[in-house]
Image 1 (cartoon, rainbow, N blue to C red):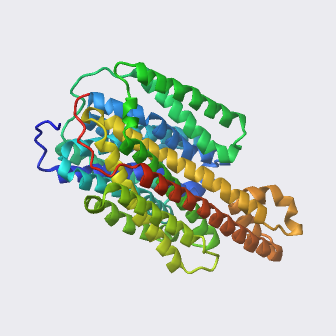
Image 2 (cartoon, rainbow, N blue to C red):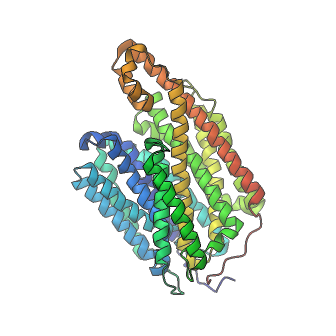
Image 3 (cartoon, rainbow, N blue to C red):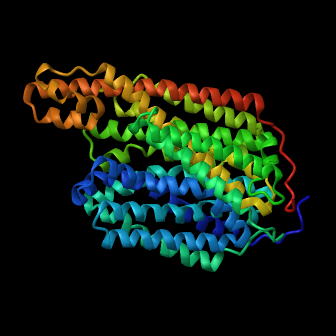
Amino acid sequence: MEHEVNYPDNRWMILGVMSLSLVIVMLNNVTLNVALPELSKDLKADNSQLQWIMDSYALVFGGTLLLMGALGDRFGRKGALQIGLVIVACASVWTALYAETSNQVIFARAAMGLGAALVMPSTLSVVLVVFPPGERGKAIGIWAAMAGIGAPIGLLVGGWAVENYDWQMVFLINAPVIVVALILGAILVPRSKDATGKPLDWLGAFLSVVALGSLLYGIIEGPSLGWGDQNVLVAFVTFFITGVAFVQWQLKCEYPLLPMEFFSQRQYSIGLMAIALAMFVMFSFMFMQMLHFQLVRGLSPLEAAIRFFPLPLGLMPAAANSDKFVAKFGRRKVITFGLCLVAAGMMLFALVDRSTAYAQIAVTFALLGLGMGLTMAPSTTAIMEAIPHNKAGVGSATNDASREIGGALGIAIGGSILNQIYQSALVIPESLMAYKDVLMNSFPSAMRIGAENGTDGALLIVSAQDAFVEGMVGSCYITAAVAVLAAIIVWTMMPDEQPQEASSEE
């Protein structure tokens, strides 16, 4: 039963602050992608260093989510949110003003990931505790909409910053936005935490960090190092060992970090699965499209980012109004329909070639946005309804972790499929065979070398573009199949009834 609670009158303003804080986190996940070419020239970064500039954020962010969500529950969600924002702001400003080497940027990005891991679970857990049950679905839908549009907006912001300023602006632009979020948060956001005062499960926290971190490392590094590489295999073995140890410890610990009984509730476990597989599709598709727009269609980073706009334009209204559809049709049908729209968008994109009009591609983005909105918001609501309020931060962190793992898998597997098809379809002119290894392993390098080598170079460019599009289409078939599989699982296993509100005590 829900206890008598006085919900704040300004809760919709609080949601606005949480949305702003959330967008900051999502921006930093992707904004730097656009700035990597300029950054690599300025700091003389090699490919390995560029990879770690991106990966250090994702590894620390995803690896520490459960721990940071638990810290917010135990010691205060507002404090976790504010501290996280300060960490992101300080690391961003320091990088923009003082970073002179790639290693310094890697360290700063890791610090930003730590701050983001404090922020993201706090935003959703605050939403859960300040809204009454009747408004919670709507509020979580808006939260999910903001989470979904963060990545496309990040590409746009990154493209604008690089084209008009320099790579440092990608970091510096965080500061004024975070200052606004900090001031509004300090004024509007109420304090909340686990009132039971249960001790934090430090062993469970340690095991969760090692397990999540090693899993993400293996997924992220697999495509570049090779899935059979010793470091990748060690990462997966470490994940398996620490993951099993984590589950065993949670089952016997008196105050577990993540109670395993949560997973016995189908709306919780199927909700996590739906989010992970939806993010698998979305991040795989977005990763391919930035290369497609820039290297196949010759657009600038900013022009490429603008082409993503139909996605958030579809996602925002679908997510924000998903509670109405759930009330009318039931959660199971809405999520299944959303995943079917995602699959339809991927199948439509499979008809694309180098000369396809953008209007057809825009329809794909719109379908993907609508489908993601109808999938993410109801799935997130299902997850948060299944957990007690004293575990809101940990529950939110599992939701966030499923997003990170699904997105990382999508980029890794989608990218690997694209690369394999690209390598098999690429035709290299005889005069350029000396570059074979480079051309086979790097589509951007093929475009650069082609531009430097006259007639044969022009033939290489056409072949590389055709091979890339063929690989992109092949990857879309796989992501469509993933979306269909997710739809089948949701249709057959997601409970349609509205679950009773979880107690605030365990």
